[in-house]
Image (cartoon, rainbow, N blue to C red; front, side, top):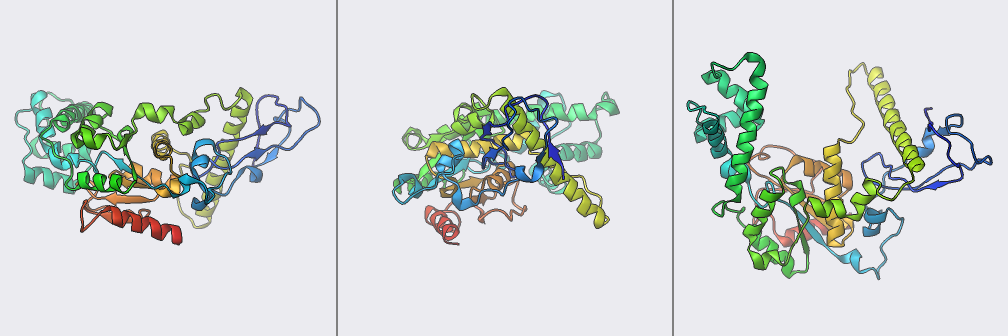
Length: 383
């Protein structure tokens, strides 16, 4: 069994409320064994790893207190937040289908700005490239220029740099296009928001998750009109950073230096043990595996945004439903334990989402409505 060591002396009778959870969330407390000598060093005293591996919190035990301060408090019937329902909306793919609205045109603008007059994507060309590349834009560019020929002055070693330049210009052009008033929101989203607000459901729009940037995301939200905007809450990067959960994640005024070091050591040990066990199983089965047991920083930021969104709504995680349009948000919802409804868009039209409670094509009576959202949430709570 692996063991955990620390590099400096700690008073071992200390009690640490840690942020370790192998599923990406925050769960329980680590109580260190008591040693009589106040200067015992952990480099010579071992803590069995088994005591640091926790079971993830079950969805029904999470509460608004749990995602804010990691306490073990459970909602009681008298707790008003226990019945509060919230819906969290992504911007990308949910409020607006950016790739259907202007992605092709943005590529053509990028080609023009870079002086690539011979390059122009018609709708059939764009559709064919998107299908063959499964939506990967670098692959789309590579396929296209392999077909028509690369710029003659471009060295082979600089093709990757060239494609990144095209994609950067495309991103700028698409952002400008999305900010224009003529770019429409997805049909039915305004009625969905109105119905939710009328029924007392808190609506939180997650501009912090938009890959088009905060300015563009907020410009898209403003298309909802001032009267509707006054009824919803917007969670941007500033609001996410200032949330109680984010403060806990980043350890601001939560840990002493020594406690934080120990928490990091324990987290590394858990990840290492997971990898060791997986590799042993793979070896027995004569398989080759490349296992990444850590949580990517970008995914952790997305998890933080979802938790901060629930905090903003003042509702427990299990009473929040994420309406997602991007794969990172869907993955973060699964880690967080937040129910997720996927709204398909031009990038995800053929993808599968086994962790989602529902996959729908649009807003409206045939697909996603507030009543269907309530129904999905009710079935989850009774199962």
